[in-house]
Image (cartoon, rainbow, N blue to C red; front, side, top):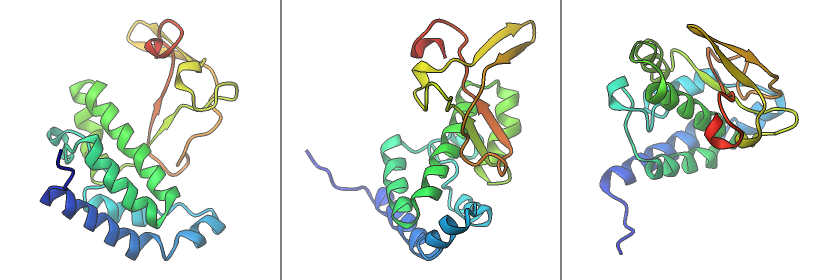
Length: 179
């Protein structure tokens, strides 16, 4: 079995590493110490395609595999684990809206998220469940054309600096299939 990287994989990995060396690593300790969320640098990452890694090309994403994306995130984390972690969250939000949202919703938000014009977060963590999605208690009850949300979220990465929030809520039975 050949585990060699393709030319594209090597190029993405090298680009991510160079970005991490230039933009992330020199600032990481200061950003942590000052609790600074580097929106300006995250927007530079968008120019490289890093905010829509596995988002469909239909919405201007790169349409990469999760493996290819993981290699890029690994390089970004070398420079700053906090920023890289946030970027994984943003990528998940982008992908979820593109994959599960209506076509009009996805067209309205996802291209702007891929470009960095809008930043996204997801609301998962709860006091009694942590980040265990299968244990969450927040509910979304259908009320005609909308959902009534009941529950509490305890922590949202990027909240306050992001524009689009996806709320994880239970719409069915207990366990992961009810989310």
